[in-house]
Image (cartoon, rainbow over all chains, first blue to last red; front, side):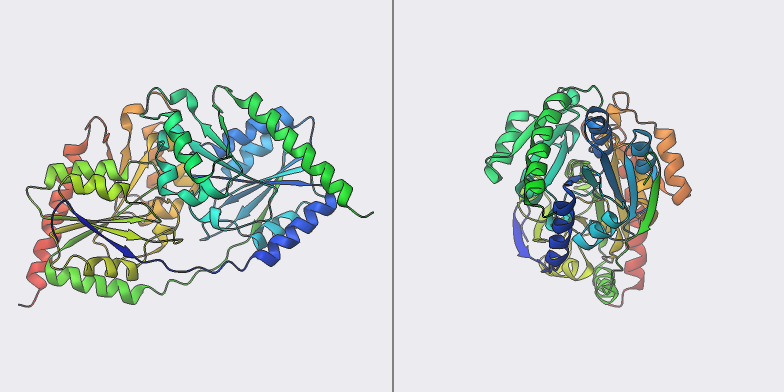
Length: 231
Length: 231
């Protein structure tokens, strides 16, 4: 092989997504109880837990908020989030690198009566969680500035399936070679109408605007669920 | 459920690792040709490609270096690495979030005669790649400062199976709440004799020390392979 050139091999191993039946059960359950389910996805260290704590602080008076913390192991995030006053279920996924709909349904069962809003904090992984419909109302992803503005090119599925995206750690943009406009351009090439909010969970920048929009979405969806519910 | 408390559910779905046979084939092949195979693993954006370019620049005169770029899609990293003078094979994993030994063997086949050193740049993922033995001589992982010093607690397998670890973007440690000593303590609780090198692929800090140690490991392993090889 010559230096400076490369070949392309397709080593795709098909995976079967057989979790649609469970996703439908999740949807039926949250529909019945008027619960808004958010699937929160990001790489490790992008700031899922910190953002979540900001959301609980901002919206905890308005909504009864539950959290499902999915981790391969450990419960450090569950402790953090519980300290902010949410009802928390810790899900240990073992060797599984993502949540699927069956595991999500198990998580719902642990709540008893469902809270108004449940946030599933997925395993830190920009790849596999994107492939599994867990029956959520909103797929919310976080990209953090230090990861780089080229990530939509390399992990396109996550940016394609998510409804809303936070660019976290925006306060560090000057330090890294991160161009928010280039990032947005890369995202919109995959997903033209993605809702994008630059935020900093650390400084609080952008959190209000994001929470206002999130509240609109929650209210609209829950009104629809209650209308559709049979007594 | 009470606020401020949480339950723990075990939703582990067992996965079967049936790739030992292929890992043995990879080892036989690299043994025969005296090739040192490195499995490079990290989260998205931790700096795998930047570190790799530094290694190619530092060791490219001493060793014939090949790279297998594993990505779900795209070839931006392959272009970058090829520009530094390595022989590059781009592997498209499709929906698969990690490389397994079978895919690795396919990658080796694309080289023809194998280079002295091959670096498999795995899919950006701190979870799944840790579960698959691809037949490498060295499992090298990168944790980057912005991800946080608590990552060993949440993704323990990667820190357990890796032989050597880089803490990249060390130049940004003052900006983030990253304590290198706490990080090291978390790592050593899982893996007491992990070799840890703080580096910055951006500034070059720490790269020389890391490359010296890497060269020692490569030379020792290749001498053993050549001794063991039958003509």
